[in-house]
Length: 234
Image 1: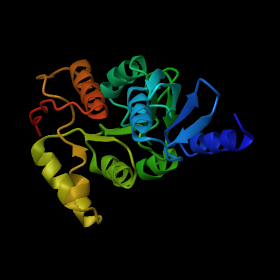
Image 2: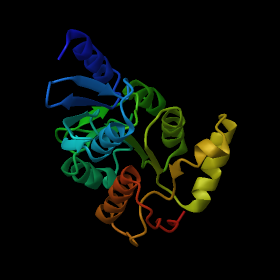
Image 3: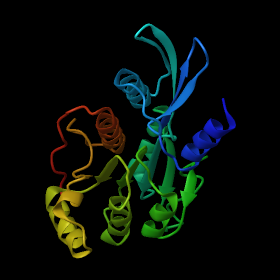
């Protein structure tokens, strides 16, 4: 690898930007996609490797290539150190997500309730903005308190995160939409929010709701079209 290519790869990692390193096995020639223009079949292989988080050997037009994806880590930012969060956090970790719990209420966001988890006690908009969600990040609000959820959603909507979910009934969400519009967000932007949060598995308990949320996060990331949860009680 040339010093210039290594520097470009390190810059992409620092910026949390997905890139794929393409190596031609016959002579060691290397390219960084999408920073460099490459033939369409090779670009397709790079895009697939990034999407699937899996390196691959491919042969294109008689040439063997090794495609190595360099993705930012998968993250879930959970707003609200509530019972659903306690169930969601270990599930998300098992699925390969780094988890951060944001809640200014120190009595809720404790190491005893969330052992080994990064806890942030700042106000939710400041915390989410500082965490800088990227295209590999999901943001889930669970407090059911507009004073905490709305600022976090405001910051999430200004980011490139691939998933935004908010706990609450359809009636609750309608009021939330009005508040977010008053904050300057368009209907198109607000439509990014999955609300009621989670897939439709008729979840009742906190672990079941957590499961439905994680399933929807994964489905969204993978591009699956699955049913949504019915409205929760207000």
